[in-house]
Structures are given as C-alpha cells and as structure tokens.
Length: 203
Image 1 (cartoon, one colour):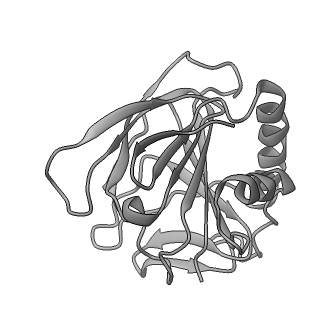
Image 2 (cartoon, one colour):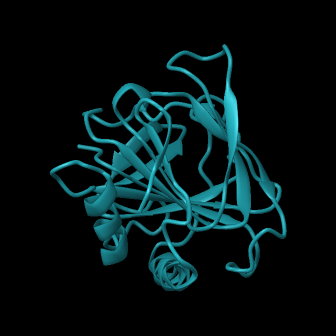
Image 3 (cartoon, one colour):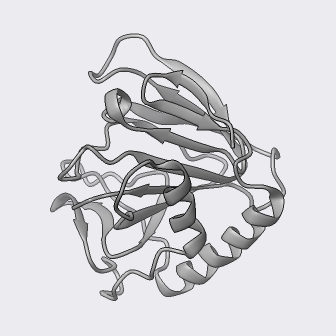
C-alpha cells in the first residue's frame, strides 16, 4: 500500500481495504455490535448527546458521560466486557502503524447521514507515542484537521470507504473532526451511513 503524506505524521492510504475486505470487516463489526450495542455518548459538562453513536472492541473502550471522558473495560449499558478486536484490524495495525505493541482499544463510531463530529483532540490515552489508525467504511465524509491548538487554519479532505488515515508523531495531537457525511457515496452499509474504526493504545 502506498501512503500520501499530507503533512509530517499524517498519512493517508487510499483504498487500503478493497471491497471484499470492507464487506468482511463490516460483517465482523455487525457481530461485535450484537454483543456490544451502539450507545449514545454525552458531553460531560452539558449532558448533550453526541450526534454519533458508538461502541468499542478490545480490552478497553472509550466512553463519555457526566463522569467524564475515559477508557473502561466494560460496556456502559450492558456492563459486559468489550468484544475482541478483529484479526483483520490487528493485521492492519501491524502493517501500517509502525508500533511494536498491539492496540488495546478500537472505537466504533457510527455516523448516520446527519451526524458530524466537532473538532477535538485524542488525548485521553496515557502514551502519545503510538499513532491513531483510522479506517473508514460506508459513505464518504469531509474530514477536517488543524494544528495542536484550537482555532487557526484548517484543511479538509474526503475520506472514502476503505481509506485508512494514520496520525502520529507531530500530528498525533492535532485537532480533527467530521464536517459532514456525503450521502449515497457507498452501498456498503444498510442502513446507510459511515462507520469509523479507530485503533489506538490507551494504556
């Protein structure tokens, strides 16, 4: 796979997952979501619901509610441990992350056609030496990113189904978000929308 280096530490692998790999991963994620259903995270201070729904797989999962942002070993609704990370995602990490240890968390974000994600940093992890590996399934999105401080100039790019984006090193703590979903750009998911899988080392 060939990467496009967008800026130091930020690499994009276009069509890293072919259609067959996307379908296989989609089916595995469906099974995971049967065991660990999508839930609606809320903002700690305001209690306002995110527009995305989420779940996790791996030893740890990221949650957000009145108690704050954190990683925990169990689903906030069912109380059950998170399912294991699929082998296909572990291989993807091994191939692309350039990091010696396996990920211990994989966030599963589901965007319906109206969902978006405000600018934020991924800073709830204990060690920032490991990158974030982000895989896209389903409808395309407009992904926006900036620097390490809020505000200032930003750039946007389109992420399509099968793309993998990696940010580490000097880009590890960049602000980033999703402006909008581009409906009708993929037939992978039914109902339509976008699934974003983000692998990381939380501990």
